[in-house]
Image 1: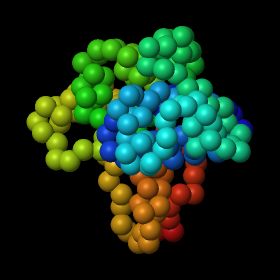
Image 2: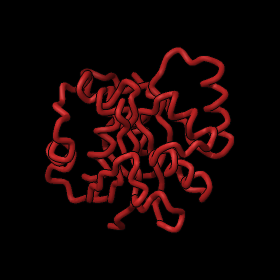
Image 3: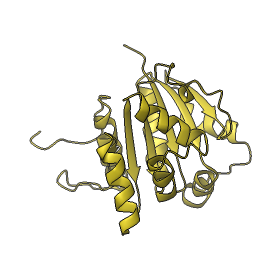
Length: 198
């Protein structure tokens, strides 16, 4: 299998489990993941998942790495030594999941105010895949304009909206649908949900 290199950003939007599951699936598939988590993202880990985040490296090892064959590399938001921060690094693309509206704004305006925004900027300037998974409702006009701006640049906007035609029975079914659609957007095979017509 061709080991791909993916950047993943997890922000402070609600829905941290989506980011966790995307990382796990990429690692399960044997890929390399360069992970960035905002401070608000760490807070959502505590609030939504009841994770103790005092020892962040140990937590990521326990919750994400497990027995998967992929490679996980965690980068602080001020560590611009991350290879994906340079266009010369052959990164296959980036997913920001869940993506807060503040991060959408930073990416849309080319702020590069932290490593996550810088890597997203690199994906856009190099013409590589960038998938944004916003988890917000309702959207205001500023947020919609920022997402439209990114969409016009080729960024895939994939809201965390689960489908119901597969007749979900559990919360995990709903999570799997969004995670599966996210992996579809970067052409990573999975079997997380039953497709229409199957």
